[in-house]
Image (cartoon, rainbow, N blue to C red):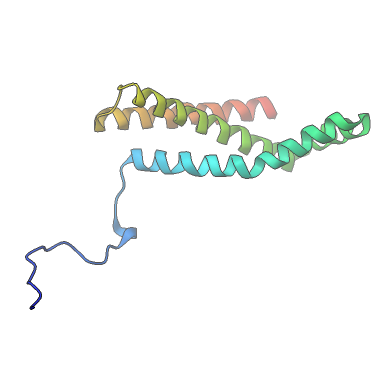
Length: 129
């Protein structure tokens, strides 16, 4: 049996780098990445909690470590990621309720998440420094 000639003109190999994704895709992808990041650094937070509750010396060590610039920067990154992840999660929950399911609503929601996350990151920076 002979293979049929296809009249389909779709590309076979897609160049992912040339594709332009909508803002909603970037927000969704970064929501997943922030979740992975938060999962990976949660061990640091559990260790700090354990050390601070184990003894007075451990508590003093954690308190003194949080005064250094690299640790403050790590705390800022973790707090900013948690803020972003929480806002994007709330956006997804709102969409699950039936609001903002259109492309225009999704774009508006994504822009709101980015704006509020940027404000949150700035707020965390003010609080920490």
